[in-house]
Image 1 (cartoon, rainbow, N blue to C red):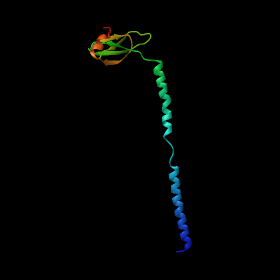
Image 2: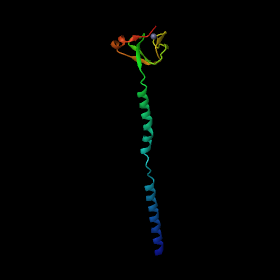
Image 3: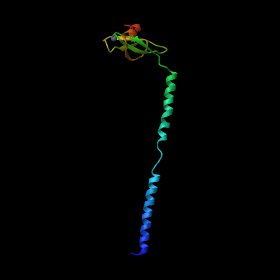
Image 4: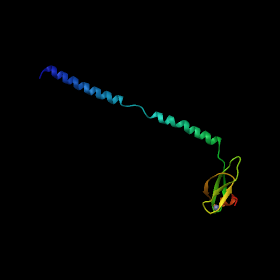
Length: 116
Ligand SMILES: [Zn+2]
């Protein structure tokens, strides 16, 4: 073997090692921070909207014992008819229906009845 050749080989090895290390160092981008910042403003807006317009809801007693209908109060409320899930008749309430709720009997008895 020629002494010069050995030197060249060792140089090459060193070069390969150094490039590998360099690649490892640069391959770490910071990712974690951004998505969280994007979400926050939307959440705040939703909270503000909910506070500005509290949907006032009233419960009415319907034909089925223990069940109440949730009616949303609107400023200029006209009578709304909804198809009752518990009987074949439709009932009339003063606003848009938002759902139904099962209640304890003592609470349910106190509620106003729906018309018809
Ligand atoms: Zn009914």
